Each structure stands twice: as C-alpha cells, then as structure tokens.
Length: 307
Image 1 (cartoon, one colour):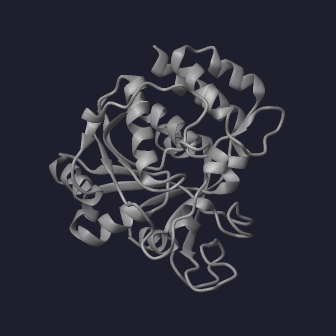
Image 2 (cartoon, helix red, strand yellow):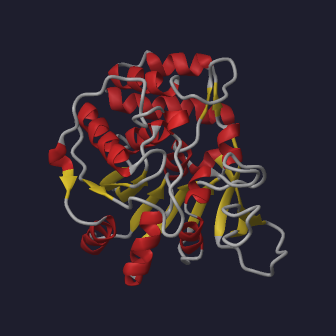
C-alpha cells in the first residue's frame, strides 16, 4: 500500500488529539509534519500538547511551532471547553522536545512539500492562520498539493457567535485566504460533527481498547461541553475520516466565503449551495454522515494505535 504524505495543522485541543492519533496510525497515511498553531489555547500550550501526545504514542513525526495569533484580530480562547492546558483529563508524560523542529511553520511545510515525490495532502483542524501564511509565502507550492481537508465552518448556527464556528471565526481573514486558494477542499462543518455523535456504549468500546483508547476516552469525557447520555459529538476526527473512509459522507459542492466585514456576523462562513452569488463552487461540503458506519470506523481507527 502506498502511503499518502500528510501535513497536519492543529491546535491541540482534545478533539485534535483524537484526529492526530487516528492519522498517525492509519496505514494509508504518512504524516510528515505536525504544525501546532494558536487556537484552543495559546501556542506554547498547543505546541506542548502535540509533543506530549507524540511522546505518549511513541511516534516520531516532527512538530513545528506555528502562528502565535491570528493575522489581524486578537486571539480567542477555548480553555473553558478543553481545560487549562488545552488537553486536560489525562496524566501525559513530559513532552519530548527532541521532536521539535526549529523555524517557522510556513517554511517547514514548504520544505516537506518541496521534497515530496508525490503531491501532499493537508489537514486543517484548527484556525487557518498557518496555512494562509504558507499559501501567501509559497504560492508556487499549490500545484504540489493534492487536496485539503478542513474541520471548520457552519452551514447555519455557530458555536462562536450566532453564525461563527470557532476555527473559522478565530481567524476569518486566514480562512478566507484558504477557501479561495484554488485547492481541492473538503469541509466538515459544525453540523456534520453534530451528526457524528458517538454514544456512551461506543465510548466504552474505545476505553477498553488499551492504553491509547483509555487515554482518548479520558480526555474526550473531560470535554466541558453539552453532551447527550455521556456520549460525545466528534469534530476534528471527521477530517481524518474524509481521507480514510470518504464513502461515509455525502458531499455537496458550494461556494464558500467568510464574512470579514460585518460587526454582527464577522467570522461567519457563508456557504452558498444554490449559486446565489453566481460563483463557482470552491469547496465540497460534507452535509451528511452515516452515523453507525462512522461510529464503527471511529473505534476501529483508534484500535490501530493499540495494536
């Protein structure tokens, strides 16, 4: 099996940890670089979380520090959801700083893409800041990228303001750069995560897998958000699923833009399925997921880390 080279931009983050773990142990993927950006918590914490997660998993993918703040606006924070560290709920080992790659994220991403013999896949499961900076700094690389999968945006109501979703609303200008990059983009919006609900019984299956399953169960059940029957809505892992089992999803093409002007809806992702703006579709939006198939895949994908 030929593994596809992958670069992950992430802000760990509890749900990020799940997506990273699945990606690191997927036989179809070869994770070349993890770029930790500001996001759920400050960069120093997301960077440490990426390193300590890899230390726990005994993986050796280089980690590079990304942006400390959005392009134009002040940073927002989700520590009320993910805990003070950003990845509360488990006693991780001390981070192996030997995995830390020096330099800026954009340059490190460029190095991986330039040295790859085949087109590289990008996964964005945090704010778009680092990929936006990379696209602006190295536009010649765009032809060397196969596709970009994103968890972010909302078709309707948001979780950061009435219409804003956290990852997009955190850096709207960066998100707009990414959505208009011309890349083949697959998007998992907020509504898809609400459909990809895993029950308490599924969570118990994860817990019983082994040390990795128990770790992920511990941090997932420590998320301070609204849940149903102690189950969990799954978000960032949807991006990994789009690479590993795309047949779970129903996609619908749309023109996606971001409101960077209005005071009331600043940061909202505007998803036009019906050609109201007269613009060609630039994103394949996930609108439906087979929930039972997803739940079984979710457990199986995590189980690979415990084998």
